[in-house]
Every structure is written in C-alpha cells, then in structure tokens.
Amino acid sequence: MSRRKLAAGNWKMNKTPSETRAFIEQMKPLVADTESEVLFCVPAIDIVPAVEAAKGSNIEIGAENMYFEDKGAFTGEISAKMIVDAGATHVIIGHSERRDIFGECNQMINKKVLKALEAGLVPVICCGESLEQREQGITVDWIRMQIKIALQGVTAQQVAGSVIAYEPIWAIGTGKTATTEQAQEVCGAIRVLVEELYGKDTAEAVRILYGGSVNPGNAAELFAQPDIDGGLVGGASLKPEFEVIAKA
Ligand code: PEP
Image (cartoon, rainbow, N blue to C red):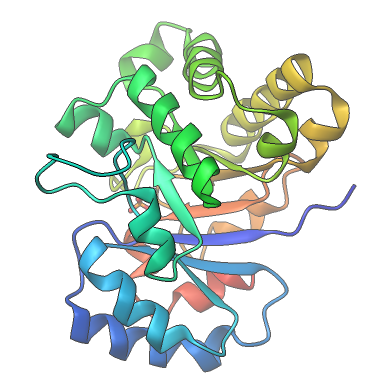
C-alpha cells in the first residue's frame, strides 16, 4: 500500500498572528505543487489567521495542543471543538515538550486522542525516548508503552486515519538527528505494534512520521525509509526552506 507522505510543521511558541499571515502567504506558491500533504501546526492564537491565509491552497492547519474536556473552568486551555470551529483539521498530542515541561502523562494523552477523534480532528500522536532510555536499551519498550496507552479505546478505523510521530527527545531542537537506521527501526517497531493491536490493514494505513532536527539536507533520506511517511518538523518549519522538506 502506498501511503501519502506528510510534511508537518510544529511552530511551537513562534510567530505572531501577523507573522503567521505573511508566512502562509509566502509558503502557498512554494508548496502548491507538492505531492505530499503539507500541514502547519500553529499556536492557538494563530489558528484563525493561518486558516484564513491558507484558504484555497493545499496547506492544512493544525493546533499544537488541546484539552480533553468539552468546556468549562480550564483557564488557558482550548477544546477540540474550538479547534474544529476555527477551521483546523489536525492537532499534535503528547509532544515531548508538553510531557516534560507541562507534566502531561500517558493517560492524559489517551484522553486527548479520544476527544480529538470524537471531534473529527486528526491526532498527530507523539512518542519518543530520552537519551538515557536509549542508552539503557529500552527505546522500543518505552515507545510501545507510550503508543499502547495513547491508543486505549481507539478503533482500528480511527487509528488508520491517525498520525503517529516518533521523536527521540535527544534529537528535538538539538541539531542531532537520529540516523536513518535508528529512525526506521523505531518507526518499523511502531508499525509492528499497530499490526499486533489492530491487524495488517490498519498498520499499513497509519502514517508514521519521524521528528527531530529534520532539515532540507536530511529529509529525503529519512523519508525514503519504508516505515517513515514524512516528518514532524520544528525549527525548519519556520522558514521558507520548509519547501525543500515538503518536496523531499
Ligand atoms: C518538534 O518540535 O517536533 C521537532 C522535531 O523540532 P526540531 O525539528 O526543531 O528538532
């Protein structure tokens, strides 16, 4: 089965609403003819301007995070329904910065995945090991645990339409990329896990991304691996050079 590649940007806490408009306008012609799907996940305040600027183009807009409740006294949070109403289609869930800096646990991430799917959003479910865990030789066990918990209660059809992003923590924003072998090994192990849990068709349909210092120079080799269906890109998604990654 051939899965369509996905080039997804994660802007993190960068770009104001006016910078967002200008950047999306700049990117539109650059990625207009890409075969891969192009997605920018942006700060909550940038979703509406990004959606407006991307209108009529092949650029999709996602959120970087959401809360799992529908509404209520959750100061500072946004709901899945708000993201959908703002016109976004995807949401990153369980990024390592959310886990490490904001204390999100696997159970919380599972609740967010379920709520995102219920609202009709495509969750981009992140997993990844620390350098210490890699050195201890527990990378694949750790990733399997993270994904198993994130997918509790999720149906095969929902998994098939979801995105899983493998992002070794030691490679995020550090300039240290996993080798293609390391990235393929873990992305392959995730596909094996999805097959164990949901069967072959689901495993062949789900898209698995690599993230961690992807740049125009290394993207093509990473994305050529059999189990890597594109990238989740932080720093390099803030610049027009993202065009090269989207075309890789
Ligand atoms: C990320 O934040 O998801 C990421 C992979 O960042 P970077 O590409 O900057 O390493």
